[in-house]
Length: 459
Image (cartoon, helix red, strand yellow):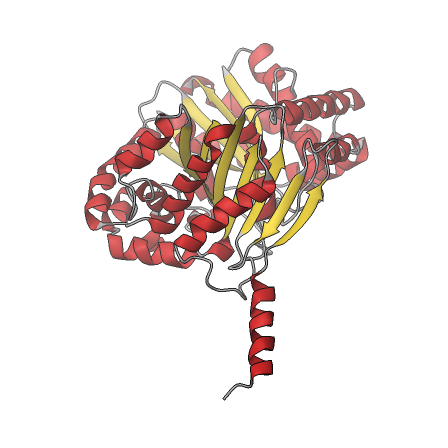
């Protein structure tokens, strides 16, 4: 039997654990741009950024689950689940969900990536309580019925077909497979026709219960919002669903890992009757937590990030060999990719690849000029600020930062990190990344002799 004093102590301890913990992560001027974070009982994190000068607000919930968390037979389950959470809950039908946001002129959507999923709604600030209620209801009360799985299967198969009909999009999935093989990161986010056809409600429901625990979620809101009010409304919605019962739960830490990509010289060709050949020439990049990512961002911008970049000038402006040519980086928790994309006439594919490979080798050995680096720093700084001009972008920044890094960085801090990149930093990361032997992915109508020559680009 528990004594009265012991029971009081236990109850007080339990209540202490149940108290939400709030801290200010970034302090803006006069409250503008202030980012606050509260950890609710159950391990649910809520982050907000206040911008009183706007009349809108974007509310989102980030789940720490993506296609890399799937087994081979579950490939596509994360994306399938994203669709199903819009199909109805215990209190709302699919029509109720969509019409609630439509009725106030808002917009609602979701996206699935390899390492996370996000559901969001953008509304007038006065309609934020509605957005919170609807999105939280979707995340905590979805039914995931077999009838909905069956009806949505056709939609997802059409989405797969739509992607395959766009070789400029599909080639990036092919490049991921070329570099990462048949691994969770190398498989497509959408899944395949076979894996999607094999999924049923029971398997998806188990996946949902495993990965949508509050400890795996981050709630983010940005715009004309009050942090305490958002926390109160989110807490009410999750408690009503019984999702915050574990008062001793703590948030899941950001992903980590030490995967090392050593793929080099691989060539994958998908022969299709397209008007253009679509190519991605690339190599291992950097993980998203690597401190050298700032220098890589400057390098990427100078090499293929705009109309003044080397690749654009050499391939398009000087020779007219492609309409679209650019470089890009993809950073994951434990690895990354660096790629150069170009779309060109099939007869020009080898010329384009040679120019791209020559530029990669030249920058790897000689680096970039101070003028190119200065221009890239200015371009990257400007695009960073301009890309955060709406509440949706702000919500994405704070939500993804909390989920993937476990911390927040102000815009001024980001600009300072970009400005601090030196020519030596860029030369070092260029030698490290671009100095590797590349691999190649191609989609297009290449003849046998053309296909045989593709290995020249990676030799």
